[in-house]
Amino acid sequence: MIPMVNLKAQYAEIQAEIEQGLQETIANCSFILGPNVQAFEQEAAAYLGVKHAIGVASGTDALHLALIAEGIGPGDEVITTPFTFIATAEAIKYVGATPVFVDIDPKTFNIRPDAIAQAITPKTKAVMPVHLFGQPADMLGIQKICQAHGLKLIEDCCQSFGASIDGKQTGGLGDSAGFSFFPSKNLGAFGDGGLATTNSDETAAKIKMLRNHGSNVRYYHDAIGFNSRLDEMQAVILRVKLKRIEQYNQGRRRAAHLYSSLLADLPLETPYEDGMGVHVFHQYTLLSDRRDDLMQALQAAQIGCAIYYPVPLHQQNVFKAECAGVKLPVTESVAARCLSLPICPSLSDENIQRITDVIRQTLSV
Ligand SMILES: *Cc1c(COP(=O)(O)O)cnc(C)c1O
Image (cartoon, rainbow, N blue to C red):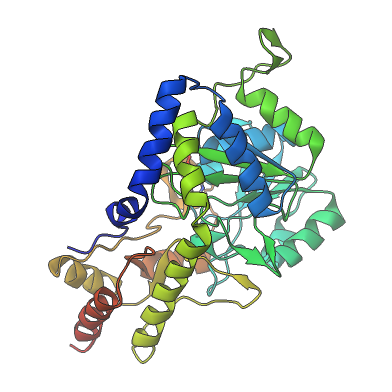
């Protein structure tokens, strides 16, 4: 069996260091916002090249708290992509705002600046691009539109830890951003976790206050906040993995490039790297008109594969009514043809060969 991600192989390499760190934390009993959360926030901010990084309970919460801190609320419209995980739009709904879905680029699967520009109304307050599958969205184009129209720019970096454009990492390219440490993400915890980032002192102070019951000083509350802190045990694990994130992302890029060279002559579309930024391949996603045949063949060969995402957000039951009449042809076509293959730093060349052999054989009949 070749799984989508092999977390066990990664753990085997760092087990001793993680167990030592966890034992120290258990012995210290400093479980909430302890020294490891603080250290991780500093280390992550330094790595990402951003002024503030605030540990929170999940990627969804990071986006939610960032939206509140940016002042987005009821009646506001936030332009985003329909081709993403539901949490992007959930965070927008939590603050009472309306997600406005615009169509994507057929090659990068990210939202297009020209589609954003066309969707702006007097109610538009923010744009939330997703760096889907680890490839940065066209941030130069999106920044220009946000500046011209006075819109907040909040990046969904849940799939892009370590991705960059011109040496500048995602997470520092807008007003604020949210990262996820869900176990299968490029930087994954052993449970849920998230990070909000910003270069604004004011926004950082608000997010810090909101994640801890609206409090800066214990038992004094300035707002209705949340219980949304990054767990100290998760911070121990994340510190160990953060030291190796470059190596992990290199491993993903190596795997992706080998896949693409082995699949190059086949009638399918391998992932496009737009060259504007560094793609960190959270997913390796191809397009094929015979997607369902490929899926069946891979499953029969005990090879993991998945459809990210089978139903675009504007067609989900939860958004059907409010998106009635919305047609996003590129998104719909991509959702009908996309297939993600196993990818993680430890995926061996032999396994990549095996996987591409199954694809080759399937497409030859
Ligand atoms: C994983 C993910 C999220 C949510 O992160 P959680 O930590 O699971 O809450 C949000 N947006 C995108 C694009 C994601 O991939």
